[in-house]
Image (cartoon, rainbow, N blue to C red; front, side, top):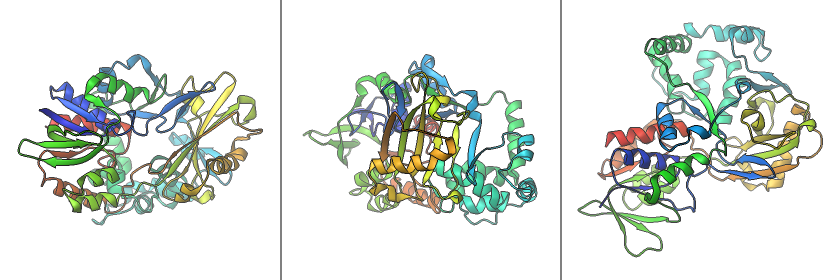
Length: 446
């Protein structure tokens, strides 16, 4: 009998399977789709290399480095252009660079003099009084409204496709919240953490990475390393427990697959479907997790069609600017090989928790909306030579207020079914590196 059956071959399921296999466990990984990787999709067209899902990840955990090396991708790794450190924020119709050092902070027009003074007062602000706060409430209290409006709001929209008024600071940005809890001040905590890291040796680099042929290279390489342990095109229809362990029923197959333990590495709504007969209360909790729609709009242009130097990561658009586009990546600046010679590639995002109405829009409408938003900002003239929309009806799980309590109830319910586990991006972090780190932690814990 196989030690572990893993359901879902996104990066969470692949990571769990690989680290378990490295520790000597037998695994079988079932994926309903015809390919692995979940939302991680890369494809080439007309000389452009596009990403339908994540465009990069931060290598900020040694687990990610271990997995990349373990599947032989070291030579395919590509680090972002140093220019990616420059990030723009739209304010009053102008793209302003987010300050990256104290001198730039003093000079920036992104914040007023009063806003800068308020930010400098952060070390003197006390801790919260025990109540759960939204990210917006936390930032207003510690850093002021200007920092929320022109820095945090667009960041949260860009990373989580979320609304900072609704997301829990304890659940969605735990590392930031921990600085206040441990050191009372974000600034003091960040400095002390930095000094501690220097004394204890080199910390993970935190460099932004992709791969020569795109992000999908990564899940494909992990799956190839796992070999016959990965089975695609195999939707799981039911889970049943018997005296020896678990029976996994696959659509189209008569005989169930048997395993001692099961790991559900699927989105919350899919996990809810499988748990409904076993743990209906847990299933109800999982169905309440929101996944707003997001569209990724890729556009290719000749370089001479855009006046902006495209000298950075891209730009984010705060809610106060009143535009529907969340932000735009300068994709061909970030990594080499993303566009033909004398061309550039832009990737914009629209939708999210603040704009779920995109679910009812045709792709041509989304393209027109994005073009209308970004054309005056970048000085675009003429039409794009490439335009491609990748739409995700359920994109990113929202760690909303009360989320930690919800997860507590989920864990309590799962404890009633020994040998049944969950590991996915709705649990303990949404990023690719979070999923890999959590996959290794799980493998080490069993």
